Length: 93
Image 1: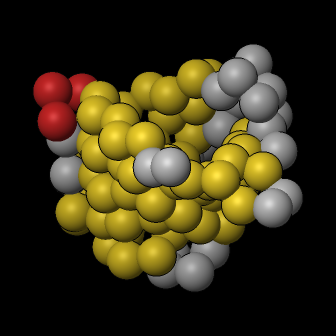
Image 2: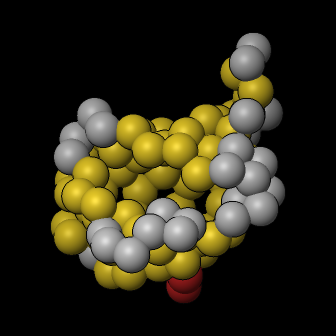
Image 3: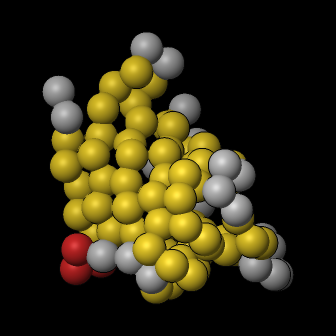
């Protein structure tokens, strides 16, 4: 079944579901800056919009374009700067 998630006073929303390879979410983020934490490895793909990420241990922001993906290991925190309202897919492994 589907699971609805809402974070940051409704500025980030996602719909969770299970795939044969593991759980996934599709979601939207309003323009802004957010800090996320992981409980397992996440593979995130930007599907619309524009963002930059600051991954664990990084000193600089990395621009993410539509169809670009990035990975974050389990038990890490990372920053996301959403430059315009955006959508994404996240795979949990």
